[in-house]
Length: 215
Length: 251
Image (cartoon, rainbow over all chains, first blue to last red; front, side, top):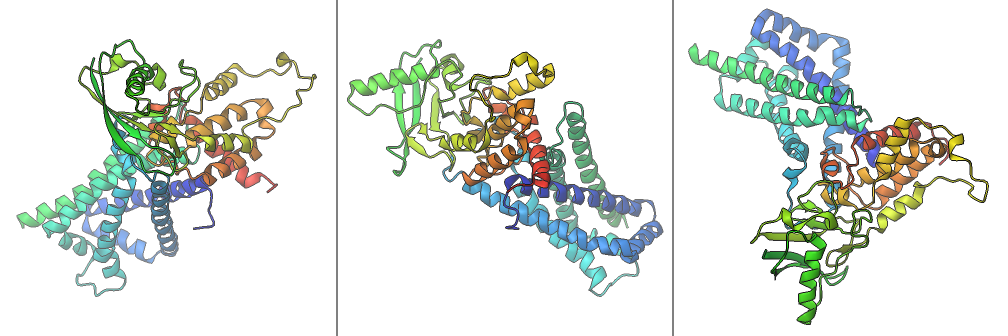
């Protein structure tokens, strides 16, 4: 990490790793939405993801993407704190900037906490644990019988939405894409993506929670 | 109107400062913010106390000296103005006003509300110039056609007065808006393009050395900038920097 000494190069790494994680999210959401269509379809997609060699290889790239994004995010925040050693007695940050843009480290770290729980819930069980159920679909369904997990997941998706709302458009600015024609569209697309991700993932969690109640 | 002022008092760079309360009375809405402080300082001098030190020069919004953080915003609540252009009619009788210096590690407080913005000068010295021979054989301006749009954009960037409001406002104390304006005003014009790669690399290197924070694209700087310098300049600098760091052969 120390190799990248320039503030702008660090921002570019942050942006590119973020955009890569966004592409992963889009794929993840698409496959998850299959659960709402049919159990077989989801199981088949899940099996494909677990066996296809390109996907298996990309898993490691994805892990590197996460580590880079998180480690650099923390490093940048620590440096930024050092750049203003004494705080203002009165600071009206809301007068000139959005909440999500000022709290990327907060939403980011909370999403990281969720990620650890999430990996333990699914990835760990499927990869290394004793799989207690007959299908991946059942593993999904069973988790959301627990209201606490459902609540934690939905809360995390809302935080992720705020993180994406700023992160998506910010990534383009960091790599130097800012244009009077395209930037408004990029901002709109980022917000739409954030809403779709939050609502899409939340819908799945809530659907299975409420289905479990009616059974 | 009568006002309560909470002003940062600090003897020198090494001493610890604190907020001190003052009362001013009979302030007219037509006074500028600096004139209001002149009134306070008159009172303090008459009472034999140390007047509040603050920077000012032109008092017409172009020198960029008045480094005050007023009620939680650089240059106060008005938009597109420096402190000298902020009028007291923006406040109400009985208001409490917080007045602090611009705060950043790279802008050490010299005294009270006066900060040292020498970091900006050092960034300029690192590359914010065009090397041309001006010894009597200057080229005729009309001999080098420049598209109007480019000239306008360069001029917009060049309106930056280096006041440091961007740094003061940024939650990361980042100087990206200032540096990007200075990089842009030269990179957009043919005279500046010759040294564009070396310039952006050197200026960013100096910016990092001075201890400014990293840009997180909150956009606060653009809102608080008295000259309306746009975030598009930061994107341009990012582009220029990426290109230069990939292709520049020296260093």
